[in-house]
Length: 172
Image (cartoon, rainbow, N blue to C red; front, side, top):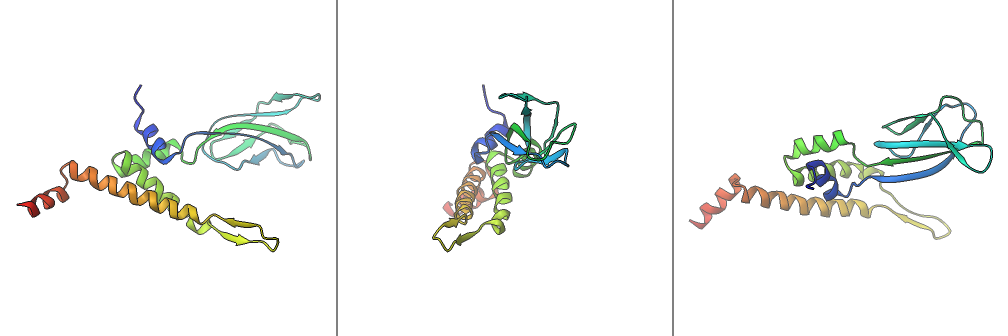
């Protein structure tokens, strides 16, 4: 079975759906809780059944990363969520495809979007010697962008773009 264009774009940018399974605590006042991810595609929440097991709830999930329970989760009471998420929504992948015109172009548009995240990247070192460096992500994105940009240019040349005409004029 052939992959759809959206699936090809997700494969190229490694945005495959991921599964999260985490336990959180209620605060005694909120019925809605934010999750650390967005673009949720399927989700289930569980609460303790009073024994040693978890039972599913009738809560609702918002694709933007919120879970809403029908009542308040008591302070220090656990709830568990399992969900599938991705970095980009299907609508965003569709937009990248329309903007880019093909799989390589869509991947370029997605990477350009991620490159705007560079201001959030950091490097620090704690007094105890612990180090954290997330700045290499930007260099990796730049490398991927360069490779995809070259692939898109090569595709344009083989497709008869104006640059291929210019190359043929040099050879004449």
